Image 1 (spheres, helix red, strand yellow):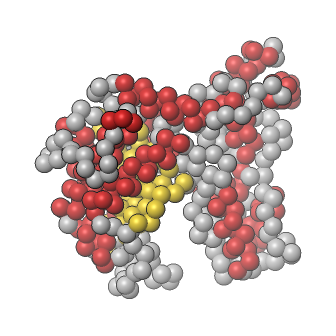
Image 2 (cartoon, rainbow, N blue to C red; image 1 turned 45 degrees about the vertical axis):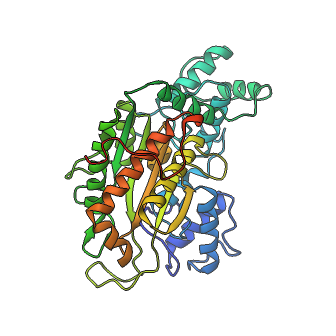
Length: 386
């Protein structure tokens, strides 16, 4: 019984909690001694957090859409079902991820693994079928699976996805100009994102993206914004846009918030302890984007050097946009709008200019050869007054 996509957290009771315990058991996680227990207790929260951490999700102990989807996918092992490309209803799960890992090792998949049986995965299966002499239909059935397992005995090791990351960066580095960056201001439209102290995340990050857009244009880099003020594309649509414009990297801009449980947005916020800067690249317990992690480190260090925000460090995260993009991608949380100190900084146009400068420098450094790089905080920005 799949867990519904809405929130499920400690203190909840009822059949949904029983369903959660069943999902965790199928995923191989210890959900407690009594699988019929219908209380979301402290012990169950610890199990959920451990599962989230293993999957590269935010380990908050709350079962939302991403955790629910990960639980649903974790029940499948390669060979449990026939896999085929179904437009508009892509199969997902650990079995698809395992297949993509094998195709990457064989050089048959020119893509990052995303756990979805899409057209590129189908193309990889077709190539496998051609090379193994099986029927070429793009469907991973028993015959094709047997051919894949025979090849598994002779091919293994290495990080094919990481090597592709490196090659994409090298290709972009060789171009003196014409690099493309997708700037992704989070939320948009009726979704205002985090709110606090009179600020809305959707407005703040759009303004920041527009300031950064001018700086990148002045240095010969094309910046494409994923949305306007009245748009709210899905993560899939943002990733598809990055692909369609042949972006070299994706930079997703966010602000965070921490609101105590039970306090709605209409009440005055108490002083918030949570504050600072955090950056994320794609990764889980078993794989990560090497170039995404390198870009996240550059972004983080340049922002810290220029803003004075507290250091909440860099992390890997298996969130949708980072997972679905083929190119290096970074998510940056520029302060907490619920922190009075951070909000005062974010409100200041001069602070936003410093953030835009830091991000432009980080992106420029990402494409430099190692011998041409400079220490953090010292590289000047072309068009900094734009």
